[in-house]
Length: 410
Image (cartoon, rainbow, N blue to C red):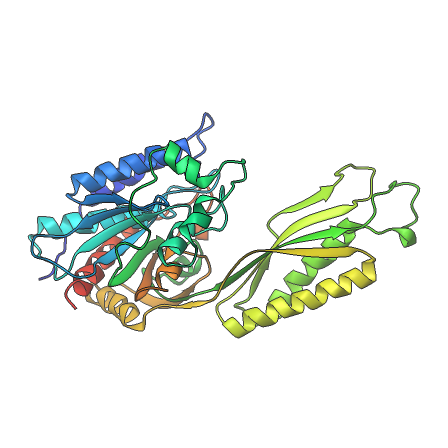
C-alpha cells in the first residue's frame, strides 16, 4: 500500500507556530533545554501528538515520546524524531522538522487506513543542543545507555541551575526509565545545515555516516604585565600563544584529506584590558572527522602542538575534555531504503556524511538508524536566517513516510 499524501499546510503551520515559541522582545528565538520556553514548546508538541492519536509518554530525563500502537499490533516500534530545544538566536528548522515530520507521517498513515506491522513512535529528545547543559545530545545519549540518568539529572547548567530540578519545575520529569521503549529502527529527518545538497542541486541526502567529534577546553597561562613597559622578548603572552594555536589548527585541518575540520568557537583573554598583556587565554577546540583513525591522528598532532607552544612561548597549558563521540556508520539497509524511496518519487539523492552531531548517532548504539537530509538555503543553520524551501521539506517528509511505512512491515 503506497501512502502519497502528507498534509503539508498543517505541517508548515505547526512549524511556524513552534518557531514563535521562545521569541524575545527583539524577535530572537531561544528555547533552551528545560526553560520556560522549552516547557511551552513541549506542551504544544504534546498537544499535537494527542491530536494525532498518539499516547504521550515522558521519561525521567524529559524525553517526550508519542506512541501509535494500534490494537493487536505488537513488537518494537519504528521511531522517528529529533529535538525542539534550540541554540541562542536560533532558526526555525533545526530539530523541529524531524519531530513534526514524525507526527505528520503517523497522521498520513492513519488517514489512509494503513495498518502497520509494528508500532510507530515519535521522539523529541531533551537537550540536543547542549547550550544550557553539557554534553549535547544528552537526552538520546541517556536513552541509548551512554550516560546514567542520575548523572544527566545532576548536570549543572551555564546559569547554575540543575537539569533535574528544572525538568521537575516545568513538569517534564516523567515516570518512565529512559530507553523503556526500545526501537526496532530509528530514522531522523533533518535539514542539512550545510551547503552540499543545494550546491549540487540534489533533493535528498541519504546520510551514511556521521563525523566523530572531539571537544576540548584549553587554558593557556602566561604572565599579565604592562603593555608599554614589557619588552617583546621578555613577554609570556597567553594571547599570542592562543593565536599560534588557532592558526595551526586551521593549517592542520586544511592539510588533511578535505574531511577533517577544526574550530575555535570560544576565546577569552584575562584580564581583558587594552593595555595589559593577556596572562590567561581560555579557548574551546572542536575537532571532527568521519574516520576514527584520522580523528585520533588529529588529536595526537594537536597534543604535540600544545607541547611545542609550551616550549616556544614559555607558557603553561592545561586541557579539559568536554566531550568525545566516535564516528558513526549508519545502517546500510536503511540508507538503501532511503535511496530507493527517493528514486521511486523521482527525486535526486546522494549519500553523504553528516558534519553535525544528531540524536541519530546516539540511537545507532541500540538499533539500526539512519538520517534523511533536505537542503538548507545557503547552508545556513544555528542562525535566524536558517531556511529550507517548502518543496524540499515536502520531499523530505514524504521520504520519511515511505521509509517508516516500509520499515514497519519488515
